[in-house]
Image 1 (tube, rainbow, N blue to C red):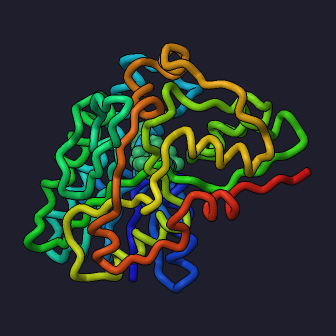
Image 2 (cartoon, rainbow, N blue to C red):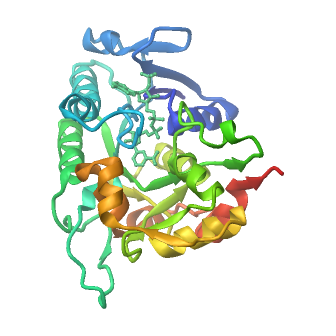
Amino acid sequence: MHILIGGGSGFIGSALTARLRTRGDKVTWISRTAGPGRITWQDVERGDIPPCDVVINLAGQHILDLRRRWNDAFIHEVLHSRVDTTLSLVRALNAMEHPPAAFISAAGKCAYGTGEVASHARYPELDESSEPMGIDFPAELVAQWEKAASGIDSARIRHVAVRIGVVLGAVDRTSTLGKLWRVGRAHGFLPLIRLPFCLGLGAVMGHGRQPVPWIHIDDTVGVFVHLIDSEETRGRYNAVAPGVVSNREFTAVLAKRLRRPIVWSAPAWLVRAVVGQDRASILLEGQNVKPKRTLEAGYSFRYPALDGAMADLVRITF
Ligand SMILES: NC(=O)c1ccc[n+]([C@@H]2O[C@H](COP(=O)([O-])OP(=O)(O)OC[C@H]3O[C@@H](n4cnc5c(N)ncnc54)[C@H](OP(=O)(O)O)[C@@H]3O)[C@@H](O)[C@H]2O)c1
């Protein structure tokens, strides 16, 4: 197959590209930067899309890029990098005489929003058909992103919408301080929180009861490949592992793997001060998301439980 991936150069896109190329598929990225094996968003705007079988959009300014201040310009970029790329793809694909068989749009588990859950109560189970618990900024962002994707001509193009959880990629504990926190291209959640953990400052976030709907990068890629190949699939699928854990459990498993202690909880006000009020809910709140339709579609998770995933991902190199 020939598969076009918007934002294919990113954390998920490059892992997906490697898997697809290994099995013999041709992959072309849609990027802001021209180069071999890429087309640009300007090409898409002009309707200059090569013949292809599947189009996936993963493009978007990283919302937890802590090098960027949370201001209006950044919020605009976070929103429009997703909505505008999706809209121009939808326009271009709908206008094609011979469109690809499938369009796979991505979004995040933040679609399920946040809401008050009493301290003695369990977080409600949410699956692909659940309404959001409440609308905060990340939920509003995902709603606009998904609305843009819903404009695809689904009578001619199979539309699959993936809601991705917190993706976990490999992280090393190295002996050199400078190597501990490589923010740059090393996306994914674990590199972001590696430094405080390695310094023994890893902390439970807020009350720690909030669920963390995580997924191993291999399974993230696996879900996308499964949905590409399963021609009967259409509609929404959650890319989250079945074994969702609380923030407290997540923190304990990571600390155990890094052989570091957990000695404190970061109070909610401190998390808000560091990452900004709007995106603090990503860390301080959570959703008990289940991959119901993904399992029903026959996907078998390689890492259904967190301990196995962390054992694979976290390497101590000294
Ligand atoms: N990683 C996670 O844990 C996670 C969880 C839930 C949802 N998601 C979503 O899944 C998608 C892929 O995630 P990822 O972790 O692979 O992201 P990533 O590593 O940040 O890569 C996304 C790609 O988007 C492109 N991009 C960045 N800023 C852009 C902008 N302002 N305008 C247009 N394109 C831009 C870049 O490609 P070029 O430089 O080639 O243009 C980049 O390689 C994202 O939309 C993200 O929101 C990720």
